[in-house]
Image 1 (spheres, protein in one colour):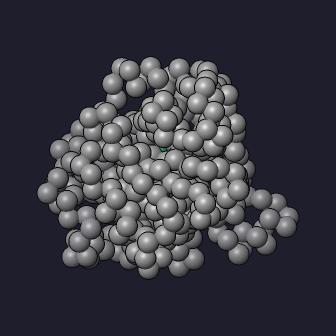
Image 2 (tube, helix red, strand yellow):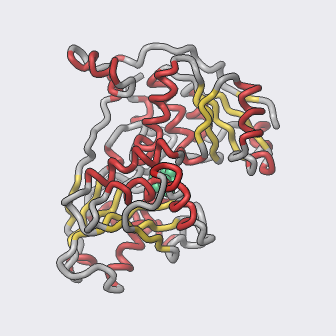
Length: 340
Ligand SMILES: Cc1ncc(COP(=O)(O)O)c(C=O)c1O
């Protein structure tokens, strides 16, 4: 293990910053739910888009705008972190420790949540060689938000699911709630069931990009029996159906909902973005006046849905909803400073 590195010591617990604190009656609500002060936009909006690549097959396309839930915790970041943040806030003094790569959306969102809620966060980062280099913009953002960064070798990182490794991390960082990479634990999966519930009565198919499978596992559980979930794998390897089944067992005690994983649209693997995919995502955003899309996940999802529609996967007269699970991030993203 490599020594921890931090731009500054993790901050002491403090009040959530002004613009997020709801005044008056909201305070009573905040006392019940420590996250209420962040004022998430829930349920997230459902937006219909007119796109001839769907309408020519008699299919209606909706976007579930989870990217609008919270500026610093967009999409499934909010949904998966919320129950874990609540658990840390309610115990008062624990840190939230989690894992991620050098450009992890999950680490950035966790760090931002720590800043906004006054909670201590530790990010265990894959790649001990990074400890000796200047922080990249994503990790620099984490450090500015008070996250203590701990760089580990790739072989140590592979132990991220092992209880003995967690104990070693606790011995070093004190009492921590350890949240897995991507935030997909049983509590997160149960919270993602609310996404499925928000879609009841609105769609025949609900489609989401899959990394760890946690969002799909929960969403599918929340859909009504006539609806089905489609997960679009952004990694290759064919392991996702097993992961989703395992997460559903952990969260609900068994299989839930109708769902399938589409494995043909990873485009070469995680974070592999071809010029064609980047162009597709930019064009989709422009056609529908959307903010720049997260290409790695949402771009691949929409690309897959266009192909599935062309293949006749969706019956005529049906409605398909694509969950916008995140948004593009750039180092000078003004939203990241919201609430400060
Ligand atoms: C924007 C975005 N969409 C989708 C996913 C995939 O979610 P999951 O890991 O729950 O499959 C992630 C990763 O968490 C993500 O950052």
